[in-house]
Image 1 (cartoon, rainbow, N blue to C red):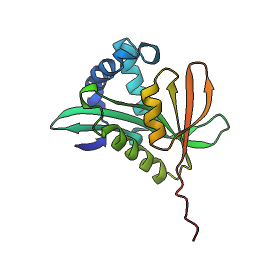
Image 2: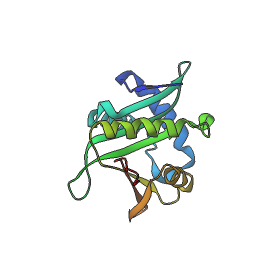
Image 3: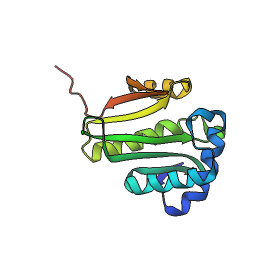
Image 4: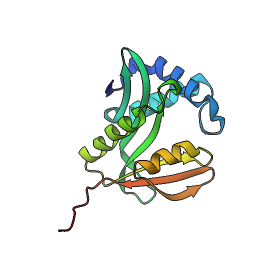
Length: 158
């Protein structure tokens, strides 16, 4: 498996993979291909260096759209994880973890101190995934729960 930056030519694959992956979570995604295309273009425009795809033997396994140019509610620059998904046939194989590690490393390279993301309140599987990666709940807005994770390495006291 390799992880690379997304290119404009990944648009059709993103749309198909996105719609397929989110078909079981109707409350938390775009359902029309036109909206998904616009979402892809928005992600690519927001921070093209932070938008990654995992693939193996030419097959797309998942995507992560991170954004080091984002500001949180208080005006602090953070690494925002706008999107992460792994196609159902590839879930449970560590691909989501590798995608998230790539995004978090990108945020550190941009000197961000905090990563944040939002997840649907009924998406328990994703919440468990984020918590396993060290994210903690940090608020709620409507049907969305905010998770955050410090990106600075903590030094051990001797």
